[in-house]
Length: 184
Image 1 (cartoon, rainbow, N blue to C red):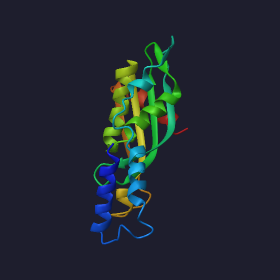
Image 2 (image 1 turned 30 degrees about the vertical axis):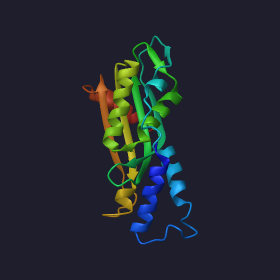
Image 3 (image 1 turned 120 degrees about the vertical axis):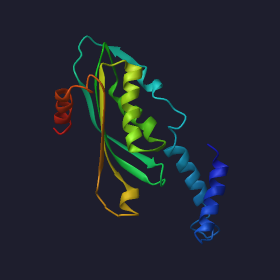
């Protein structure tokens, strides 16, 4: 990430909105934002493979669910945060991954300029690709500050996205079982 370029751009934004970038409270703002962007966009050059490649062999094929994975991301349309919970389910085919690796997979994709719909698909697809599981299902519930702070200004409204792959795709009873477990 080009920290100097970010600082220059932020300085220009400060000037463009009619503020003085040399004002005491703003002098270090470009540097703070450049460091923040380095952190919140750290998933841009990362892949989920490094997290999903450490697996453990299992003999069963029962549903695995990790729910209430807190995340935040940046809406690519307005560069405002959206945040919420991701719920991940998959059916193993001989191997499972450590539960923390599911949360790390969410972070890899969330730490990019993002759309919630794409984020949901990327998580489900990465489970299918790297775990070769029988099916994956991802549900994300999030509040978007671009809906809350600007435009219609509807605080508290949430967007829910659901993606199914593999055996979950064509089996409504499996989907319902996961949704029931998420709501427990």
